[in-house]
Length: 483
Image 1: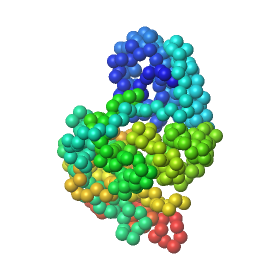
Image 2 (image 1 turned 60 degrees about the vertical axis):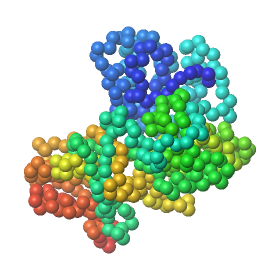
Image 3 (image 1 turned 90 degrees about the horizontal axis):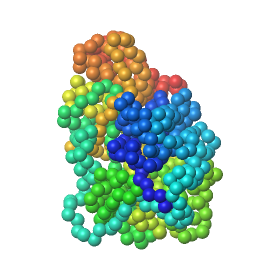
């Protein structure tokens, strides 16, 4: 609309600039029990400082959009608290807070769509800046993308996330030392106990490990085959130079990077296209039938049909592009960055004790694979990547405090069926390492069969024998009738 702006996560925003901003638009989701999301917590802690004067934000105008679910008691709590605090610090609200509700028949779009249509006019009036309306065929680019003709001065393949280790102390490098299946070979599901070695690691039972997975070589090949079929001159060896535009440039994309590295390590090729994806594809389409369908998918009334087309069969972005061949032929490096989604990090409860296995982190991972009406089976991106890791492989990861609070001063009842037992293995091994009696701990574990998918069975049987742990198991398929 002709307004110059930047988009950033709240915790990435340079907080020292806050009092000098003219206009800020906040979009805040609510997590847990009315808590702010993880990428807002540092920003929120700053706003709560008692030392901030009540006129701290007197020059700032603002609007807030909350994303929530009214089935929760503390519905849109983070957005409501943010609005209240901004007002306390003297900021001027230009439009009442908008609270999007996932329980609405149209989902959050029922609030988000009209809010987005009105907000730019409100901002324009508040700042006295005229709008320059954009047409439907215009694609707003988040990054500046340029194909480089210079020869490579680095060795490929490489892990594009490792460079961030030098500037981000929270990131760690872990090495795979064991990757074993815990389920019987003839069991339908593959579950892995993956052991990682990490120097000077410090964590407590209940903590979480984040990993950032990569696409498989088959997925990457399918993606580049699609481009080749449409004579799009982009290959794994195409070198890109990417610059910041409206959105902060991720560290892994700084400098020169190949399209092959991006396709393998940055873009999620399992991504299920959303409404905004369809909007971009409609903008570049020159085929009337495809453009009409893509436009329908990008409207509020078309969301149920989009859900049936994408979400129910779990159709990914590459498969969608194959279904719209006349549109796919118009792809280029700039459009790809607008329709592809970055790989999101995945969180796993740590299944080990640092006191029991020093400088080791264990993960209990169920490998996801299932069928839908589509021909190819659906594969979980992260679980299949983790299962493929060989001993000696190094990965970038980071730790986060968990929400479990264990208290040895009171008896504990632990209920963890399947891989949900991971965090409980951690606290039980921790207690054993400290020489504690486990007689006041009850562990309830459930799975299909004692000899099929009783994860970490040896650990629990030993803890029961040597430390007094009482284990109660429910094996649903070990008798004639399912229980």
